[in-house]
Figure 1 (cartoon, helix red, strand yellow):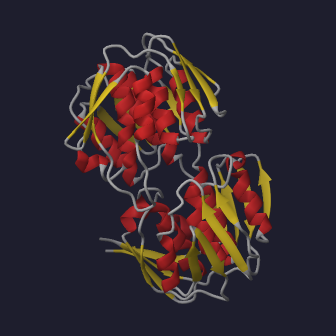
Figure 2: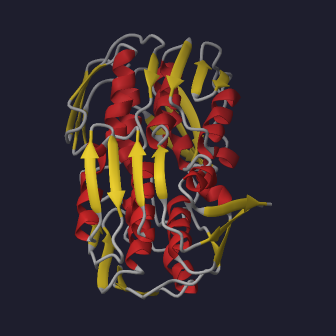
Length: 416
């Protein structure tokens, strides 16, 4: 068990470069199953979740090699074992292999994901979409057992937009016979990144980035090389951390158009931002102003950043209301922030955050990836020392976060 020790109260200053988009890299890795051969994914972040997905693909027989931030995946020797609960339970993205396994082998056995600290995240939409393509599904001992002699294009209409379900259906549909139309599809940038990778493999996909995606099935795909786009959540994390500390930070290698909602809320809170092609510079305010947020599907405010915005608002000069329409119960960070002196109450799934003059460092525990990042933001802004345990959650989504923060002048270290 490792922990982060942060001595807060120091404004962040300097330049930081963000890594590749984790939530695009994981389904792209799963998609390599579709085309036997050697694939290369560049700008892959070195994260715990990437290691977990690599391990799962190796269980299937893939050969995977890392060279810095490039990942070579040879899926020509993949066979069909099961995706065990021991792995799927540690990372829900493991469920992304269901669609590719069905498309390539005509069958799949994948453990149902376990519970999640941020609230219910059922996979019924994944299963509904794959059933529409002709897959037969059974539940056996906590596993989804799926078979499809031949997947066929169909109309899939999701009741609510789901990023994971949209990605699983896309990966199955590219090798289905005929045309698949996905209505009320998720519009997140991760969807377009996956679609671009599939197109580079020979898939025929149009409409990604909108709520209607059309896929014309092909008979086979070829291995490809692709660049993973910059991570929008990591980009925003450094912007929020700078705003919380009253610092001045430039984030390089990013795509500002992916986080326009975040940029707008930071300006509303009093931060000054200069946005250029691939670069965002932020100057934090002396003290943030109160700013309400409702997390919604893209292009709305990201649910993954709702905990970080909550942390920022704990020191705002006024009261903010924060709710989450994606995961209405995503408030595991609230009890930990209270330990640091935050004045937060949750009423009818709305967090009422009454800003205090300053937070106090305290021992806290990261319940999940983004709640952990919120505690990092709070620790950087707080007086005194904050000790964050369960750092492995943070490592799932942030590469060498303590090193990047130290490069910006933060006093933070990792210890066992």
